[in-house]
Image 1 (cartoon, rainbow, N blue to C red):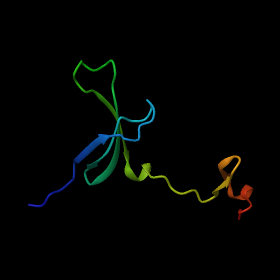
Image 2: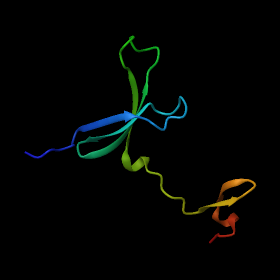
Image 3: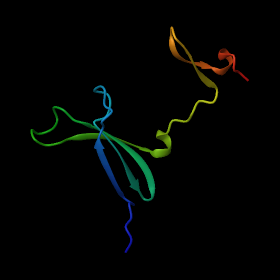
Image 4: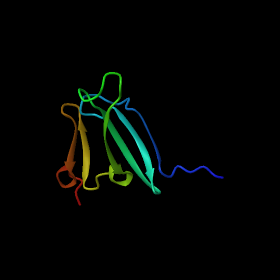
Length: 94
């Protein structure tokens, strides 16, 4: 019998959390062969003392990927730092 991750998932503490709007946990789940990303937040005030209560969001993994911008470029200068500009304004336009 072979092992399958179908209909299984996991979450871990979010070590990149910088403020309260960032999720406390991140992870993934496979549902009927489709991969999803999970983000979860600890619920404060609703939970019983000593019990963990979460709210969570699930999105298909292909929707959570950030595609590279094709019509934008990053210009950097020492005074203003990096700026993202439309390609036409950067002098590299098509």
